[in-house]
Length: 298
Image (cartoon, rainbow, N blue to C red; front, side, top):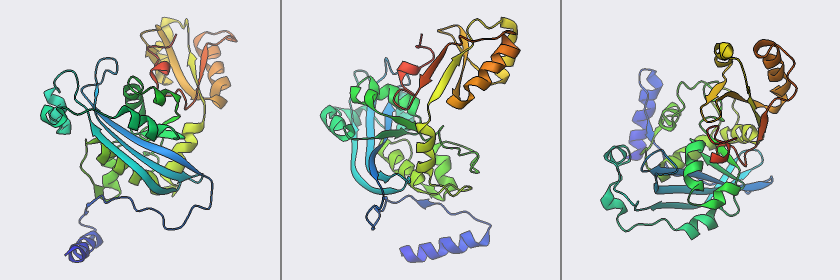
């Protein structure tokens, strides 16, 4: 039956008039042993009671532990974890509508903190599709995640340059001809693993290789401290953002662009040479953490 349906799907695809989506299957480990240095990575996703890491709680945690090579090739899945957790307060109705997780599902459930710690202990990198959200949610409960390098598959892979119009996980999966049961943690982890193991559509590079290359690069957060109010439009046009906590405009750039940005601020904003420009160096160890949240940093 499966072969017959695959044949029908291939015929429909071949007409150019239809696009057939196939259900995403489990990752198939590589048959050949690695011929390069390998590392341990985690793909992680959370479902939560809300978006405030200080007040809301994780109600579902999904993790895939996998082995990958220096080339970015994914070799095998080592272990998976998918657990529910009963929060202190009832799950908001909008969260249940989004995830399908009910109070009855989580009743009496608790995520095994020791299992999470053991799973993460030897990981070289933790990957999430919205790493700022997931990292902040995880760090508040599992301190081991503060010690890890993090990468964001949503914002640190050039999906748009590779021909994708959207960066949501479901949209990307559709572009590759697949669908999955979205908004459940482990299902989203499996979907992300499939995307990272595949070649990018335009460049042909492995998505994981591209992600790791970008994640490894340190960035510098430059603060335009004391900039005149009249220059706010110029700063916004150059992609500076406003920190309400520090009452200051800032921008994150790669290290090799620091002098370019300093020249811009000197010539266009302050109209004088700026030598003591406030700046913070950020690496994958701190990126996306609440420690580098511009509304917290001082």
